[in-house]
Image 1 (cartoon, rainbow, N blue to C red):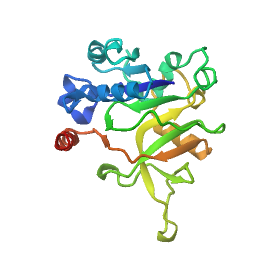
Image 2 (cartoon, helix red, strand yellow):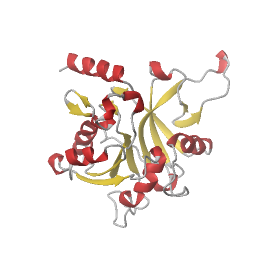
Image 3 (cartoon, rainbow, N blue to C red):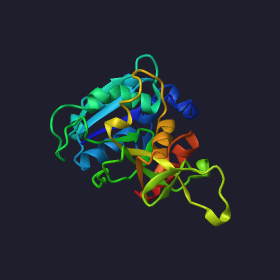
Image 4 (cartoon, rainbow, N blue to C red):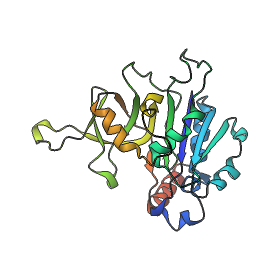
Length: 244
C-alpha cells in the first residue's frame, strides 16, 4: 500500500511561525509533524510515500530527502503554481500513487486503495490496522470526537456508514456528530472523475460521495490534534512533554 502526506498548505493561521517554515515542518517534541507520520507509516510497513508541497516546499525536500533515513521511499509532487487544496493535490499526485504492478492484496495498483493523512495533524494512529474497503465504497475516513474549535462536527456515523450532518435535529432523533481527522483510505475512483490541475478541496467531494453512500467510517480513539494555531501547537507540546 502507498501513502500520501498532504503538506502543501500555507498555514496562514500559524503565522508568523509559517513565514519561514512550511506548516508540516513545525515541531512537536522536537520532531517535525511530518516526520512523526513517516515514522508511524514505516513502523506499519507502509514505505512508499508521496508528499505534495507548495509553500517553502524545498525545505521539506531538503530535510526528508529520499526518505531512506527512515527506511521509506519518498516521491514529491510539487505544486509550483500554488497549492491546489486537498483533493486537487491528491489528483495531481495520482500518477505517483498509481501504477501497474500487482499489490499485496491481489488488486492491480490502479485499483488498490491508498492512505492519505494531513501533514498538519498530530496523532498516534496505528497505520498497520486498516480496514478492507467494501466493493461499493470509494473511501473510509476516520472521525474523532469534536474538538473545541469544531463543536458542530463534520459528519455523523450510522452503522459504519458516514452520513452528512442533518439540516436540523430534534432532541428525540439526535445523531452524534464527529470531526474528520484528516486520515482516509481512498480508491482512485474517488478522484479520477475530477479535472487535473484544479484547485479543489476535499470536503465537497466527501459530502458528494457520502450522499451516494460510498464512504464508510471509523471512530478514532487515538491521540489526535489538529495543529491549526500557535496556541494549539504550544498546548500540544506541553501535553506531550508531560508523558515523556
